[in-house]
Length: 373
Image (tube, rainbow, N blue to C red; front, side):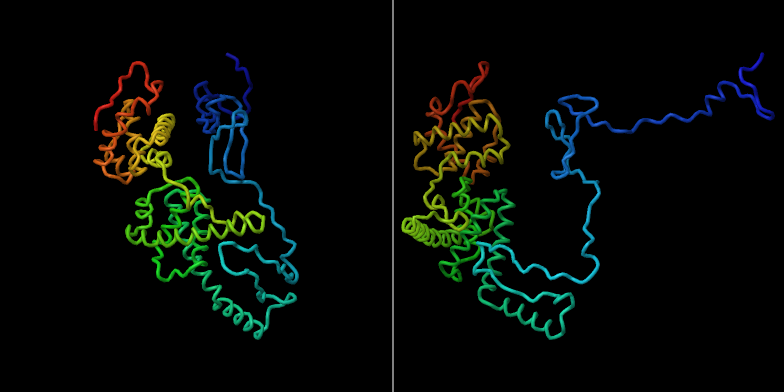
């Protein structure tokens, strides 16, 4: 049988099975194709946002990946790598309203006309640096910086917003500038400014939770809180008088918010914090807030602490909708006793259930679980 292809001299003919075995082996395709689960477009329309470190679907905007590293080329200006040193600009940074003094100063640089400083000039630079550090204003600012670091650390641990941190630091600075803080416990003062800052930004927290956050006794906190409330009241009155006289509004960066002095705690303000710790979100959270708002309008639990009233409203809504709720965890996150919540629930909240609960909240096939606590 004649062969289809002629063989060269010395070449050995191979059978079909041997020819197949010498073919290149097939490997699994390991390329990952990122497809948006919502759009299902292939090929996908991906947009790389290196500023946020995310890969976003260009069609629907869904984030498909995060913490993406920027692999693009980094450009650098090499114009100043060679030659003599240039004289840097002598314009300093902007003044920080959280510190004392005008914050305007000069310093001796490391270079003078492109050449390094002489031994005498370096000595003058060290002497000027020591003189700046030993000034009373600089010492006061160093103490403020230490207090600000602690305030920011505590606020971040509690999950407070950035504006709460800034407001607490501003209150601390204003109080230190108005009176002497030597006789006041620093931890109590820090707890007080954090509590005032949360009130002025409608992010209320109970005094017990703040004391637990800072790690101080309630008596220490109470002593510092009373002194600070009196002093801040005087500051707010002076600001109002100065604004009325000058006919100019106060700078929002340095003005003390009067809401921290006049705002009252209501049960509605404590519902989001308690529900967040209990894992209650979405529609159930909105229903708890609405029930607490109605309770506050009708003054059903008047005379009781707002944390207790908020916890009783949450308990009522969860039982009405048949949602399981651990009463011990509720009492723990509300910083009140279990017996206190049950007593308010049985005496005041449960009889007012027709007012607090909207019938449309409950499905048609669900029966209420309004049992006495």
